[in-house]
Structure formats: structure tokens, C-alpha cells
Image 1 (cartoon, rainbow, N blue to C red):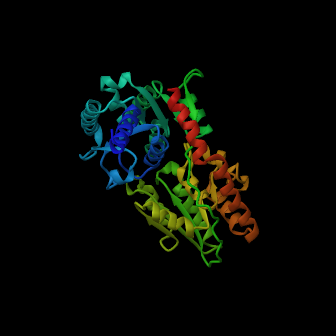
Image 2 (image 1 turned 30 degrees about the vertical axis):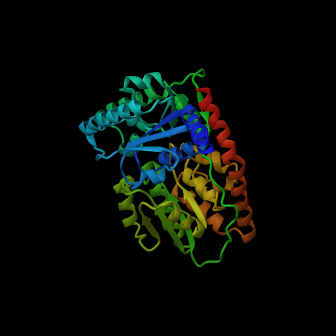
Image 3 (image 1 turned 90 degrees about the horizontal axis):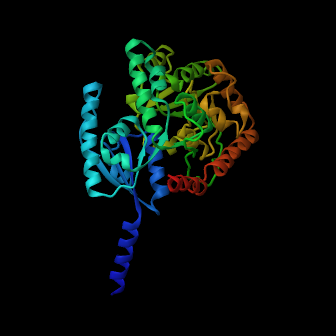
Length: 395
């Protein structure tokens, strides 16, 4: 047997002896769920074959976004409403069936409820090993956006039961201690049920930014612009700070997550010269903003199970100021508790930002070094990969 044929044979044996993981997304969109799924695939690529499925959305080229996985795309419009969701599920089941026919799937990894429930409608899914990443309680998030009411309460009970159904039949990964406590209390998990705390990893930039003197103090915020994310609070804090400092703020979020109440607040506070609203920025643009930024602000009011954008900022040496909410408190307390506002209010947040602005060059540099040290200690790829692979072997 020639060397070329031997190499091809070894490659085939290695490839087909690997177990195969199917990752399920609702949509290929720029979000924390998608970013984390991409990380998982990178961690698994040496030991597992990875397949991913989702509806096409605002990631124009999922094949390029997930270069380490075999990508399946449902090239149909993702529909809204009850009938629309039923149509989505039917299309999802058909796509999953195609994958099951073409590939031997050993593990199914859930991230969202719709795609997860759709997968469970296929009887073959029941026989697979199952892992689920808990990003947040869907019913509680809906309440924070739309409030309560008879119909809304019924819908939220259904959301909770469906998410609970998936979680209780899977080995569960959570991203923080806060998320661990939330899932146990909200879904009545018992100690015998398997929940593992595995935060995201982040690639270090290997150098601390130079702090340049500037007439403007630049603040950034990335993420969903939903009421629970506290953008109202941030806008009001900027209005307060603008009286004392020259502030420029960039808020970047997918437009589908903008809540009209936030737009009204933005217009009412007359912040058009101080706050710039961006949409659908890519990784290169995000890094460019972080290089320019003096501070990242995370003003969440509730239900913050981690905040990958915080980690992205910290990895560049850009400090984060945040509210005492969810995992924000857990993360920032390991760096410097003074970065955490005393309470969830625009006044308290403005005072914390002002405290940082008034620090000396030496003090700011010290905090920036602490940010990098925190990332190296708690979010190194090598460490996270070790624990992540243990979960896969365990399930």
C-alpha cells in the first residue's frame, strides 16, 4: 500500500471512528448563543465530528462562520406566531431527519427551546446522548420584556415547561454560579441531576492597550437592547454624566432586539450627539471599537447569566463597569468591586463611571492589568477545554 493510500486510510479511520455531535440552533444569527456554539465546536474538533443546523438569518455565510463544522441550513424564512412556529418545527424535523439518515449522530447538543423541542419530535433523538447549554429562563425573559397578563402568563407557563422538558432530559452546562442557582430554583432541579458550570473562553490579545489622552471619554455596550438589559439606565446615566464630562457612547445591537421604549428614551433625552446606535457589527468592527473605548458598561437589571461581551472587553484590557445583577457581580468582584455600581439605578451607574473617569493614569493601568489577569486565570482556552471535554465524556 503506497504512502498516499496509507495516509488516506488513516484519515478515514480517524474521521469515522470519531463520535459525531449535532448542534441545534434556531437561527444563524449574531448572538451569544451562536458565539458560544462556535467555541464549543472549536473545543471538540480534534476528538469529535461536528454538525450544525439552523434557519438562515443575519449570518450571511454560516459555512465560513463555522469552518470547523459541517453546516446544514434551512433556507426558509423563520416565521413568527403560533402557526409560524408550527411550520418552523415541521421544517426543522424534516431537516433533522435528513441529517439522521446521512450521518450517525452520537450526541445532540441543545441551545434553544424551539429547535430542541422540534428535535424531540423525532423519535431517534430520544436514543441519543443529550447535552443542553442553559443561556437563560425563556419565560422570565419574556416577562421582563412584555410583562404579565392572562394570555401572557399561559404562554410563559408553556415556555417554562418546554424548556424544563429539554433540560431535565439532558446533561446541562451553565455559564456561571448565578445561572447554576437560577436553574436549580426555577426548574426544581435535584442534586442528582447533572449540571456543570463551564464559562466561555476568550483568546487573549497579548498586550495591554495604551491609554491615550483624549478630549472625549468613550463608552461602549454590545448586546441585546431589551428592557432587562438596562439600556434605559445607561442612557439616563449618560445624560447625567454629559453635564460634567465630554462623553461619546456606542451601543451596538441587532435591530431585531431593539425595544421601542428605548428609542423613545433616547429621543426624549436628546442624546443624538452623545450616543451612537449601531447595528450588526462584525468581529473586526467590535475589536476596533474596543481598541478605542475607555470603558465598557454593562447596565443589566436582571437575569444576566453571563455576558460574553464583557469577557471580550476584558480580554482587550478595557475595564467593565456594571450593575450588581446576576453574573455581573460574580465576574467583576474578582477584578475590583469598585467597578460594580452600588445599586441598579442611573444615578449609581453614573457615579461609578465618574469614579473611573477621575482615576489617575496609574490607577487605570492597574485595573486594566487586573482585567487581563482575570481572563488569563478564569477563561483560558486550555482550562475550559479540559472541563468541557470531561462533560462530553461523562454524558
